Length: 275
Image (cartoon, rainbow, N blue to C red; front, top):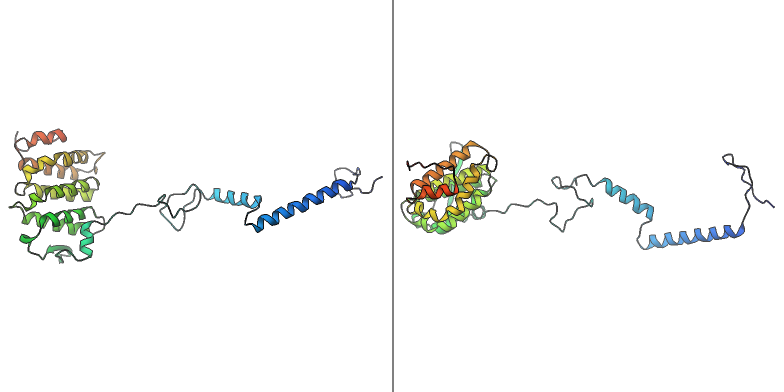
């Protein structure tokens, strides 16, 4: 006996379908259970599978985009930021001792403008200044990238080296000085390197320093050799010339075998003393 027949126009067949009260009852029960599970999941804070899948596809589509709130940050593989980790964050450069002292006004320096250029001069009596303390502080500022700090540090350091040229105050500060110069040369940044090489020339002519530098060739000369390489160094001729001038000054004011020791670290070096 046929109680129901599909009469819709899109029906693929006009054949009647049997009515089954038992099957219909089970379908109604399953639908009710599904509805109950959905309501329970929403109440517990969970998300339906369809919504989770949609969110997953949306997250995947953002993997190759940059976070607008962090313009320089690389894309995250999870599509979200990680504020509690260091991943994706650029490392902030540490302020040098020179800059910290200068901003706290703990250095006896004053700023002067000459021909439109700002420079610093010492206001303290340099004859009574502790070179072992202040000279390394000034040299630490050579690595600063924000002007005028590196220029001020260079002026302050060169003034100390010029003032202490004829006594042993610079010599006593040599270990700390070499440490700062090595750190600055290691940056391989052109502006930093050029200032360091000029400081090194002035340093070598100070009383007793030229000979004492032989004990620190191992720290400084390998870096000078690298800087002369057009691929590994700064890549310009000005750096190569400054390196040559610094090495020649170190040889001229160094020990008798200075040229031989320098050539061990810088094979391309040619003696300027006719040896």
